[in-house]
Image 1 (tube, rainbow, N blue to C red):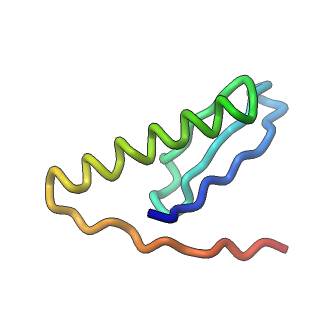
Image 2 (cartoon, one colour):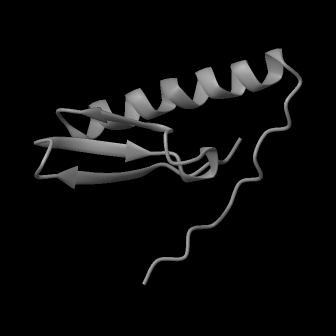
Length: 68
């Protein structure tokens, strides 16, 4: 699966925030380091895929983010 993970530094939270855009605005996690945020995001993604499959819900279509 090829889903997007967007990782940004948050001054407000003093941590890296990782978002999974294809999964909606609440699909987020964080980490003290970039690497930790990425690993946490991968775990969230695995959990989301598992949960969707458990209830036979269609997975979101992977998207290419348009930035600029």
